[in-house]
Amino acid sequence: MGQLDGKVVLITGAGGMKGIGRACALKLASQGADIVISDFRREPKDLPPQEIKAQWRSIDSVAEEVEALGRRCLKIWCDLTVSEQIEDMARRAAEHYGHIDILVNNARAIIGRDRVGITELREEVWQRFLRVNTTAVFLNTKFVGRVMIEKRNGGRIINIASDASKRAKPKTAAYATSKFAVIGLTQASALDLAPHRITVNAVCPGSVNTDRLNYWEADQAQAKGVSLEEFRASIVADAAKSVPLGRIAEPEDVAKLVAFLASDEAAFITGQAYNVNGGTLFH
Ligand SMILES: NC(=O)c1ccc[n+]([C@@H]2O[C@H](COP(=O)([O-])OP(=O)(O)OC[C@H]3O[C@@H](n4cnc5c(N)ncnc54)[C@H](O)[C@@H]3O)[C@@H](O)[C@H]2O)c1
Image (cartoon, rainbow, N blue to C red; front, side, top):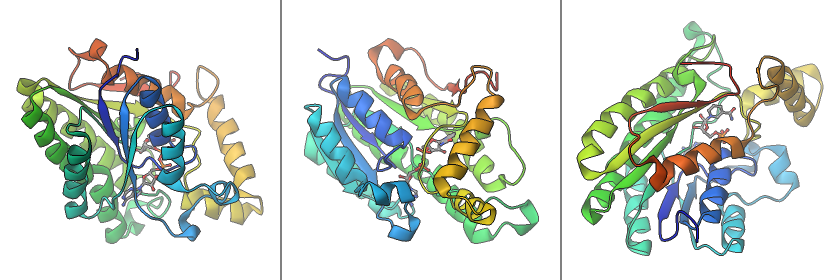
């Protein structure tokens, strides 16, 4: 018996081969949950070379892994910049399984184009970050929240925020703003949904060893004349030096906290924002 037997979880941005969304899908499925995974269709030029090399097929590949664990998996292609698609995703998931018990708002806009100083930041890039990282979290909470309220069985909403939700770094105005906003949204929606026994919490990872395409990394690798894999490995090694526990997070480190917050054990925890960072930030 798993602690999530009979539960249904919806996870956004879950197509990455090394992504936090995939790790959450596998962790929650291994604890008995049936899964809805979503992502948006990306051009090959927007995919990490590692995924192309491995012939990774986004949520189609993740669904096969979930099913291999003996759980059901519904795949939904959904572009989170389009409100109608978000509303439709909640409707389809609820129709398919009859209920949604856990929502993991995990997706984020692809980083890189935003990594410029504030005076160089293009408005359309700013808007996209707020749209994917903040507004889509609001809309998913709204539409899935309605499904949870209607079923009168409580629920769990877990927003994947960031250490950037608590401390900005240079050249991250769009990302940090969009992620700070997620903390406010987490607190406000926790209060609105508390009467329905729906908890809302945020998880704030520090650097995580993922490889979803990051234009900034691709550009830097090219500038240095090394492969993206080599450049990524050097970033991971450098970042580990400033982490008290001596390494950056793996996606599974984040998924373990998500699984706890999704469980009955966390029934009295709401409106909080927990770090998973190896000791780099304390508030
Ligand atoms: N990787 C890290 O170092 C790190 C650190 C702190 C916080 N986080 C947070 O963790 C979460 C997951 O991070 P990750 O590194 O696994 O993510 P990622 O960047 O690898 O992938 C994010 C996913 O969101 C999807 N996505 C992007 N735009 C979309 C759109 N318009 N519609 C639908 N889906 C879209 C992408 O296709 C991708 O699958 C994010 O919220 C991120 O901000 C990550």
